[in-house]
Length: 406
Image 1 (cartoon, rainbow, N blue to C red):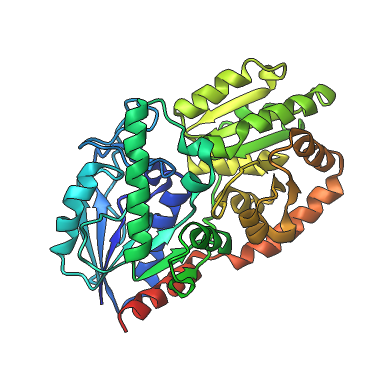
Image 2: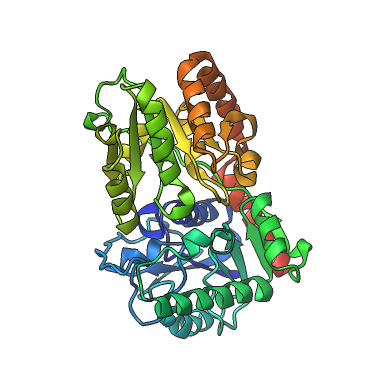
């Protein structure tokens, strides 16, 4: 088979955290596990704007890629792909995702390759595409979480056009695809709830993997202050569904009784993180809250290794890579008791109600006060992470491809 992959979002600094990591690991591992099929990778061109790495936000009408907040964005200069081999062809594609340009130009770029199958790793499938395709759905946050769906500083008319475009493109991706890959059973059930006409047998659940994060031995550890002080770490973007406002409230409650406690947010520097930082500055605990902007993988590894625990308060998730990364680093996890996280993490995390600040503070405080409980979660996490492997994900994905073209 000749299989195309829309790899324009490859890399966490380009595709936005988990989505970018998924595309990067998918292509890397497919190149290793599948020598029989031939692959065409449609990759982002240099200087393509990194605003396109906001997977939770709908397509924006126009020929340029602009952020959901309406801000100008700095460009990304990504090196050429390191994937090589006679069975791999690279196609640089200067079309930003989530744009009208994507809908107009990508079908011709893809269709002229005469592929047997295309894999689109997100919902943004061009409606005019003629090539048969498989789509990966990571979550339905824009349908499940109204606050994130409305998270924009753009004009209401622009937002309305964006959201209408999103719903149409998503519906087409689900109904016209040969197969749908869901990253969790929770995501599959969300698809079936919102799109009951999609056959259950069309959706295949394939779990993601964990990427080892390595610390820089020469890294500056100033962000964490004194290493003996307890530190709560939150990793990821700060869109509304991530629920970091509630974490600030819970932290205020905790800090009042534990003045040595610190909270670190590590993630993208954008309009949402800056708004959260402004809110943090109004709290009594403001001096104990730190923001680490646009951290590298090495920096994230350093933060995981030295934090007392990771706190992951999301109201909606499809899979949840940061808790697994924390577990792989030997860091205990406190997180929301939502279906996807319960499914992925099982008994390896401490759970709280994300809508209850007091419950969040209670669960975190209990972990802070009981080191043996943290050690128990670390041990259970070491077992749990063995279930998630990128190579296994790639092998299962190849089987989906072959089912589409027996």
